[in-house]
Image (cartoon, rainbow, N blue to C red):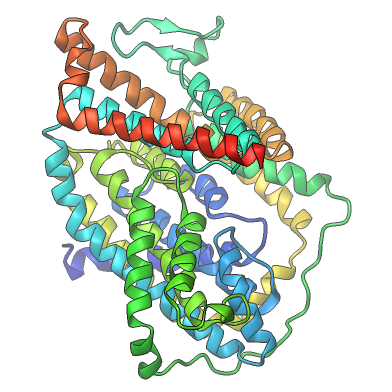
Length: 490
């Protein structure tokens, strides 16, 4: 673990990151992925530990901020807050906004801390174990991660088709550049700027920040937030109440952590599953959706636990568990770090600084949210058209600074337009991003395995670990296709 002297320089960045993340999370339409994609280029000149502490704190704050607007304004600031809204706002309408916020903030803190402890104790052993994996094993693991994206697409044949199209587009965009085995440059279409392929950050900034800014500018009459429906005086929950919720907290945090580890799932799926399990286990399931404290605690604890869970495969295996983690992967690479088995050996100080920053960011989050919930909620009424020009400027500056070339700016604009098409067509972006990030990893490991085996695929089916991964991927794909077919028939 990092010492106190190592932690002190990181504290201002943690406070700044959590504060900014909370503000973004409380404003509907703004996402953690958007702000992190914008901030990553600005960290280029920062020391690596400070940069990663800032980004992971932004991650923590943005996931937590959606609670406030969902509770007080009935507006989910983040997609994951939609489940929280089901019980948090009814509590506000019943005259208990302070209790709703107290339970939500406390559950967020506990879920985040428990997943942080899992990150602390599991990431290292997982990294040590993964060093023993062969190239074929890593390819099979990456392939399974990519299939996970398909398995969590919208139900129905159309949703599955959109997920496949999005993932395939991401894989195609990752192909230009040098071949991992031969080094031969391919698919550049005569553009010398593509000799190294597309830079990750211009693609992500275009997809998440620029596309939303374009849409906000094109909206003639943006929706305005409702005024605060209730005043928040005290946000206090007794120890007795937390003891009563202890089983729910531990179970939901464990579910959130596990869901976070699975690539491509995300906080909204984690909170949904934890909410369903809590309802099934409750003695009063009929209260869910009407102001159930159990439902609120389950949703928020799982919501925040997915953050720490998603960082485990990112640090240990170099596999992003969500869109935000894919952006964080880009930040690691930008600072000369390669997440994966050797990160703990080559940069142990940076790794434990990151883990410590995540744990501290949860403490900062609970302090800031308890003291400023009433004021942050008012941000939900901001006209997003006024924010769009600022986002446009930051996007252009960020894209240009990555490589000091206009080509990256045009790449960002192109993917901004693609992002608009995906949003308009309701095509999920997660499969695109994960496909774009994981395709080079999968291709590199497959090429390495084939070179070692003399071109034979036999070792891929002889290793127990790779066989398990391939079988799991096949089962996931089978059930996804079957569910899509049955949903279409229904």
